[in-house]
Image (cartoon, rainbow, N blue to C red; front, side):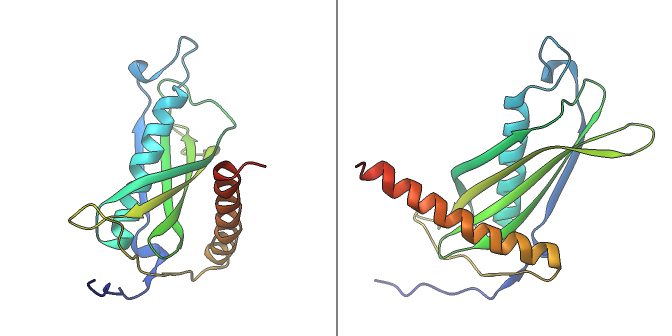
Length: 166
């Protein structure tokens, strides 16, 4: 068995990703709001970009823990998504994504959605591979790092309970 090459730690800011686009009618439901599925697709794509930047390889989505839809984003408004790797484990990492609606003229943003996704890094043979540790710098990054550890414990417990029901 080949020894796994360890990568040096990476700062959160080195892999952050952001995207903005206008919500068009083909993205909307009959009420004129962006479809939840469209938002989820965008969340998954941007989170994967942040995860790939962090580990320097392809990644696959392992889970989506939580998605909140707090406020609608209407046709003609701008949707803005921001993604950061919150914490890396041995072969997986949690990425947090925040979604905002931005007013076209005032540029004011309102937080509309949040999501937490887990990605697994894969090698050229599509097998899981190690990921570099995350180094949080700011108070916010350190908070997200700690909370990601708690969410991982919950995920692992939930997975164990599903595999071995009482």
